[in-house]
Structure formats: C-alpha cells, structure tokens
Image (cartoon, rainbow over all chains, first blue to last red; front, side, top):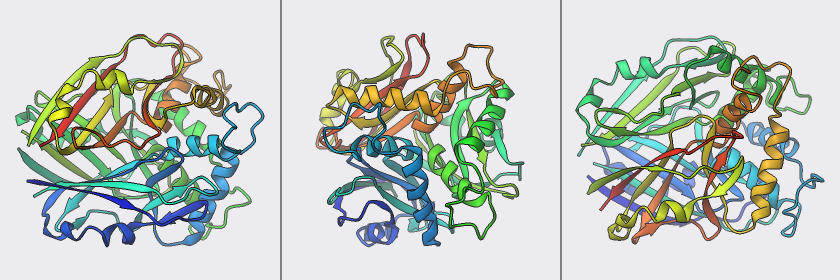
Length: 140
Length: 140
Length: 140
C-alpha cells in the first residue's frame, strides 16, 4: 500500500461552476497502477468549492450559478464581513454548503465515478485567481 | 492493513429520505474483524445524496423532504436544464448540498457512529430507480 | 503506515460557529511524525456540524449564524419534528448542509490546510452540551 500526494495549481477561471475531472486526471498517471484505494481531493480555500455533479450538460452548471446567486445573494443588508467585497461572504457560505473536499473510490486503475459524475470547481469569487488542490491517493 | 471494496446496489425507493444503515451493514460482515480504520460510502449518482442524519424519528426525514422542496422548488422559471423533467435540476442541487460521500471511522469492529446517527439516502428523483453505492473499508 | 484514532470531547459552546483548529491540534502531537497521509475529523452528532471555513475574521462566523438562521428558520409552520424544541429540526438541516466530517491531507508533519482555512464547529442547538469528535490519522 502506498501514498501519492500532489499539490496542483488550477488555472484561474471565471466566477461559476467548472468541470475539472480531466484536468485533475491528467496530473495523476499513478492512478493506473492502483487496483483499489481512495483518492482525496482537497481545495485549500474557503471561497471556492470542490464537489461532484453532473458532467454532461453545461446548463446544469449555469443553473447552479443562477440558483446559488439567489440562495446567497451578495449585499445582504445584515452581512458584517464586507471589507473584502460583496462577493466574499457569500463565497464562504457557498463553499461551506457545497464542500471543499471529495473522497472518491479507486477501482481498477481509475476513479470509480458514476457515468454522469464529474469533479466540479465552484469559483465563488469574481476574481478568485489560481486555486490550489491537494490530491492524496492511497491504495495498492 | 487491508482494503475491502464492494459495489452495492440499493433497492429503488420513493422520492424522499430513507435510512440505510442496517441495509449497508448487512453487506459488510468484514467490518467485525477491523479494530481501527475508515469506511467510505460513495453514491455514484448526482441526483441522489448520501449523508448522516438523525436515525430515530421518521418525522425528521419527512421534514427534510418538506424543507428541501421549498429550498429548491421544481419548475423555478430561471432553470435551463429542464429536458429531463422538473425534478432533475433540483435533484442535482439537493445532492450537491447534502453530499454524495461519507467517511465514517471504524472502531472495535463497527462504525463509530454517534447514538443518533444514521446513514441516509436522499432520493431526489420521482423515479430514481436502483442506486449504486461503493463502499471502501480500509483498516487493520 | 499506521493508524492513530482518538475520541475527543469538546467543551460546550454557545449556539453559533466556533473555530476549533488549535483545540484539535493540541490533542494530536502524533501528527508531527507523519510525512504524508490523511486526517479524518468526524463529529458524532446530527445537530452540530464540522466543516472548514475562513479562520481570521470573527464577523465571518457571525454572518454564518445570521445567514443560516434565515435559511432554516426555527418554528417553520410545516415542521412535524418539534418535540425536542424549535431549534432541533433546523439543527439537523444545518448539520446536513454543512456536513459532519472533514478529511484533510497530512503533509510534512501537519495538516495541509490553506492559509485561511480553519476547522469550524457549528453548534446548532441552544444547549448542545459537550460534543464528541473522532479523529482518525492515517499515514506514514
């Protein structure tokens, strides 16, 4: 059994939701040699999220953005944490609700994702910049 | 230290929230031999959720259903992902908020759940069918 | 590779959101000897949450409390699970949305948290009492 851990820097993306499965897998050729295990993906930020959702229709990600903008509207009058801009507090809320880490089973040299599952980056800031993800593969 | 991984098919259930702790444990007799470790439960879908909640009073699950129907109402006029029915986009949203994987500590031959914790399947489609769960036990 | 598992009892806190990174780390001196691995933090309750959020400005936690009180208001007229008080059902909802477990990578003798990430206890009951957290370190 062995560990492989990598810290990956993502490209900067626009506010919204972005599939990053292929991007992450391209950095993890070691997966192919693993028969069984777990892969933990962990984003080192509190204003962006990392979670699993539908991987086919772009309107799903567009609707996520429309929904969460309504669920946690910027400029709510009762927010006190406003110094870093109107999108900062809501970014923390969205990130906490959607989560910042995903543990996916490894099976037969790959991630055991369902047919329609993709790893999704939720960028909740207008100018979030490049984000860091730590991937820890554990298996044999 | 060793891995045990199983892919389990759940029975089809009605839309709503269902406790599945006993069902999952009945498929995992290997747990008894493990002194310490972790158990990862992972549902391979993006319109059903797997999370922990109260395991005793059925009205808790009924209230979850009532709450999330209001939090993410079907037929919101701004949804674009509507081709697969009015419950599809909201199913993705609920699944993302509630999560699709749970990592539970293993201690002394069982899951180290709190007294009132149960593994809960959130079926967010009206006709979701049978769902797949991958369980990965790692321990010694 | 080895496991270290501990069950920790947290001090009772007021309803709201509380950083507990330092408190947890003070109980985990074994981390220092680990080069690589994962740390799973698991709260054994369904009316309190354990998740990651911003670790610097106290108004962030204050705004979390203000936001979630509005998102899941006590005394919603359609709740049926009301026997344990008006804050019980909403505590289950908040805990399910924010989550009860966090898996953090271990790197170079510590948690590989981002600069602004802290482990946060969401106490969703008015009198939640002392909560139990199970920590499982796995690494080498």
